[in-house]
Length: 303
Image (cartoon, rainbow, N blue to C red):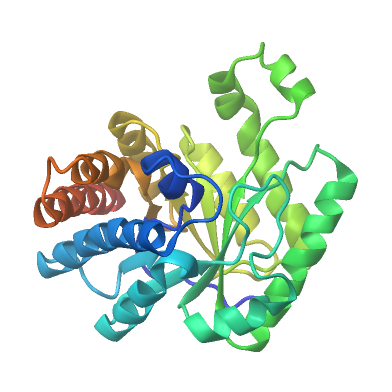
């Protein structure tokens, strides 16, 4: 059984790998040492953003980063030394099926990076392919046992992409799916995964438009004695307006302890930094301002 995590948690995620390598820089395949260093430098800009935010008053014990070992090992070490909450991903980037980034060596890498949270991103639709779901659940249960045996925390980012038939039921409209169907599928996914032995301490949840859907997700996350399990809302690279709506809705619901908003926080400043239109300091300041904006919105809505 998970121990749960029920303290405020404001995460700046920049563990994206393909989004940086290909999306930001246009590089495919194996990177050269110089290219790897450039991606790492871009991630350092984002990290400086959260350091600036903490220096400007965001409480250190609420401020979290999520960054990958490949490009961010030095950042993880530095953030731990600074007393920030750290998270690192265990999944291969950009896969439809959850697989460990480092295969059977996943435990060695978690121990070496020593993050506060080990995070997984998983696409799991309870109405989807049963064999695929079972394969994923088995690996995720294995990770759950490993983490909790070692008194480590498990952050589970749940994405529920629609099955073709489900989207048809919504007239082919993703917004209708997001509002009318996805919330109940998320609850079903959480319950299925828990029943398969997957015990998340924090569920990282796609934005929800209605308070009652946030309440239903918390009820599923906390059922059967899991009273301290927390939920955080993610940004999904959406517009500022949409992120504000999702943060405000979730923050008002007990059990939602924070957020993880990445691309909406850092993408535009990073593109300008890449194009040498912004200095590192100015890009970091813009990222800090956006992150602090989310903190303010969340804390105001939470009351």
